Image (cartoon, rainbow over the protein chains, first blue to last red):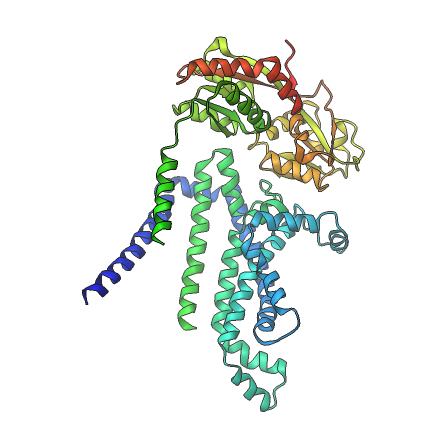
Length: 260
Length: 252
């Protein structure tokens, strides 16, 4: 009996101590600047620009991510085809390598190659533009969304779909009327995580979109630029805004997860 | 498992107790290539261990201001050394002007936009990259140069990106994402840019050339070695290394 208690106490205290350190780290962001300072910085044109651009690009990218993650997650969960293992590895790759590397890869692809030229001839110019921010966020967040969607579909019993098919629904009708409603919580979780990931994307945006002041300046770039300008107040404020956004996202995510 | 843990702890202790350096150098980050070579040579010649801390000029200046132990201070622009002198942090007699930090126009291999001089940056359709005027020194200097030439307003619409760091600027030019960028001459000779960049000099009347100075700190913990290293940087041997990495010596 006593042994179990020691075990339990050890594990719990480790959890608590690390949580406390994290909480203190997060809290110090709020303690250092004065509220007056934060209020002023939030109303500064630079910050308003960054918040607006972040939300706009974040929402656009999240929408795009979900449009692609649904069929891709479903494909990886349900269908079998030659080379599936390799495809899965390729899709997961951006999770493993640093954002900066991903940014550099995208810059090279969209830069002076035939792909980049073809895209820019139809008006899709990704280098140093706001569209580039969306592209950078899209590729950074997509693997996470696909992963969540795949495991969501993995948990849905295929028997439901078999029954639906046997009762006369086509594959697409089954997907729309059976699989999607069952995956509701997973879709919500995936959307929230994608949005948080998009808002927080830094390295990819920095390289592909340039990270120019008041041009392609999203919130993480504001933080970075103001550290190098030596303007700590502004840097801390953008940190706080980002923190609040990701806290809300994680909160919603946890709520949704309970429902899964 | 236990053994692994013990080994980890041992490594932690050892690294914490590693011997203190015999010489502490604060250097601008842009000088890393020649500085590393000179440090290695100096270490071998004197059988010592030198520790170089690289940072932006503002950062290392702030380090000295905050009282961090420093023997030799080599920032990227003379302004910092003069400010340090005013505050009594460096010894006046030891201040030596070493080399020039010269802004140039870097263009991708083959010069696709046919840039011949500074005024070409104002031509419509030319894609230009400069450093963020608020962040790296080269950004501020680039803006100054363009203003001196009276073309800042005309160039602004051409500026596709304000890079937060100088190395990003180099990448964008080397990868042909822009037609021209204003950058330090010495950076262009770095191996990274070799064969991918060409240099177009900026006309003398517009250019804003910086000098890189060295100085020994008043509170230097290892003053003897500091004086020797300070002299070595300006010695003929040192100058050869500066030149090798693309820095031009100051005219005596």
